[in-house]
Amino acid sequence: MPVAVGPYGQSQPSCFDRVKMGFVMGCAVGMAAGALFGTFSCLRIRMRGRELMGGIGKTMMQSGGTFGTFMAIGMGIRC
Image (cartoon, rainbow, N blue to C red; front, side):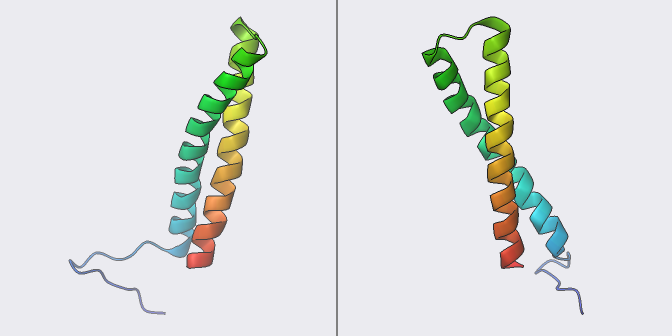
């Protein structure tokens, strides 16, 4: 299969590179949203200190992984 060439002579990223880029972008957005929602929910139930940081970190990792997975799947479908 020939490699597509862009307007200035550079090659296009491969499908695997696009899926990786989708996962990383989704992870970043999901972690930012997880930080906001995790902070709000942990402060609402009056967590403090180490428990607060653990709760926020857990929420960030969960939402980042979930959103990153869905973005990777979406980029894979577009390939």
